[in-house]
Amino acid sequence: MLKTTHIIFFILLMFANLKISAQFMDEKGQLINRLTINPEKPFESQLGLQYFPSLLFNKDFKDKYSFNMEFTLNTYTTLYWTGDTTDIIAKIKPYRGWVSFSGNQFDIRAGLFKINFGSANILRPLMWFDKIDPRDPLQMTDGVHAVLGRYYFLNNANIWLWYLYGNDDTKGWETFPTDKEKSEIGGRIQLPFLTGEIAGTYHYRDGIFDGTFADTSSSRTGFSENRYAIDGKFDLELGLWFEAALIHQNLDFTDQRYQRLINVGADYTFALGNGLNVVTEYFTYQKTESVFEKGSGIGFGAMSLSYPLNIINNLQAIVYYDFTNNDFYRFINFSWTYDNWIFYMMAFWNPDNFQIYQNVGEANLFGGYGAQIMLVFNH
Image 1 (cartoon, rainbow, N blue to C red):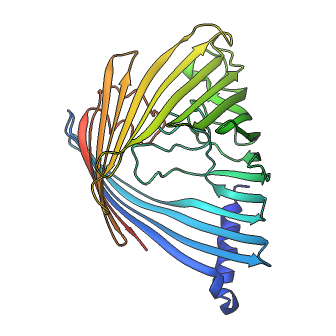
Image 2: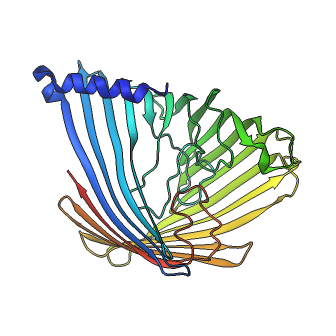
Image 3: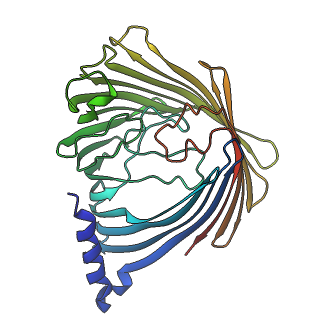
């Protein structure tokens, strides 16, 4: 499974060399240049250049079936300044590499790709396989090695089944990574309900952690994990949704083996000027000894405001409030789009001790206050 992306790459190169297949082949890319400055002591800054070259192949059969492939690389060079210290990181790694076969009511995909689902927008209990940060205008996230099958019924119900293997990095809210020698399995069923839809989701994995994290006798210890979730989204005069997830881990070093994650939210577009979209959510995370027992954790409120100034400019602001520590997190983003170019100018003002999105790579850099400028070119 770990070599799937390499196999897909060689298949795409083969198609690229065949003139008969040229009409089904496409190449695209995204170039990103960003500068982040955090003047909090010690002064921190990050200058990065990132390029995503992609090869895509598509072939339709009798207007009924479709065969697709994608291979995308993530190539980047990042220069860090921290106080008087500088560091340079350069890397090339697969970002996407998958094949899929689909029909009018089904889709089967295998390889390295993104899996995400759920109803919440900002603080998502169902962020199980991705690390999408709502403050990131590009919504970038690493993929997982998986096989995913989806079937769509004529009444808009759908069912998902997945199999994951070889993923040894933490995903979503995970604190401990998965044992890469073990498989992960799960599924999701989504049904039409009232004015919207409701869904149930399950996932099983075997995790592993360094025993030095806790008072354990072994250096590496494994555990099993079961995740259960229900979510729904409904269209009334405003949009309403909820997500609730329960995670059980049979850990040896703690009695708090359950985790509860709950989100409720709403959105509405006000008829002000060009239309002001408002999204608000409440999120709580708790660790407990049993399913219904009161536990310890955190609670967050979030509000996102988005306003199109005109056809090429947009202004967005996101505010979080930490009810546990009485802290505000503030983020604002101005974007300008022209042809293939997009310019972003962002500013943030957060507590020094960053409590949310701990597994997102730039979480520490967004502690305190600062700014980020990003220039994106798509071709």
